[in-house]
Image: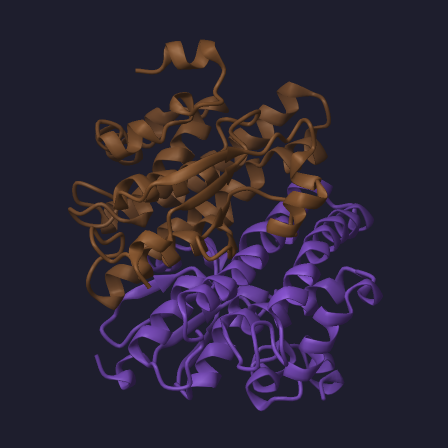
Length: 227
Length: 227
């Protein structure tokens, strides 16, 4: 399959939940591989994610989704990244060696399965109702708990980046998670390695261009605050 | 890497949380590939998962973990399944074609990222405290919500099994999730396709042998109730 066939529509919730980290992961990968895509926002407040049209694309009513040129709708950020890697292997997002690939996927899944789901908006509403303080407390608890294990994993796996000295999928999951952690007031002083790697990555254009503040539907005040 | 090198110790929480579905996924894959392994239980009540010894294996204090013959500790069930697939491609757990592989991974991640984390014991305790009814209610809510989308995904992807007519990783994630759903009293009548596929899979020896009730450390009364 030619790599040109990927370029596609990225459904994203940035419009309202412009900080959505799962969509950001996919944008980093698309930037990394140099794949053009059409950006579409899914407005969670208007309920677009539950519209008949969007549920045809993703029956779980979640973002992101990626529609390929053949019209195939793909869902789940990690599945999308693996797909992108398979059809466009240049600038690999997975290292050589099965053990190192397993380490990369262990990091992406620690973030995607253990940390991120517990600070998702739907869960925060279910856990904290309209009480903003309770929501922040819940999110802060789970991110701090998750980062505590992740920091030790990185002590074992990291070089310049999460696994060794090459950028991988793990880095593309780390940066958006750190962004959320800051949003929920997690004390990052406890996580020097996570902080150092995330800061290094944020100097790169692929991570900057894909940043929530730099999306077409981000609110003006956010765009102004972005570097 | 020769496939014999995988065979390894499977750390598992079956001793106490013998129904642990993330460990079951890995056991199905090992059975499917015909890989011998040494089964070790991690006793969550005794706190073995927080012991110095176990945290060296998995710094997040979670199960499962797989130790390869070279002494490498791998964590996160999906990362472990991808690793097993890479080093022993016979009896593939991923289909041919990037789109079909993306569909398989979308199902595994819908289960591993959207459903399973929200009915994990740690979260139930945090959400429901010691109130057993509140715990069941919370778990039931998230599994039902997740299965509603998953059922529609299967309408689009399934044949005999989750994606087409061959068994894949998606099936290895489905069966343990259905087992948990039944435990938390989810009304499965609303999910005929999930039920049909899971029932079909449970007739196969790989899924039966790996069943929680058939593990060495399952309580006697559970062993007797297993088929």
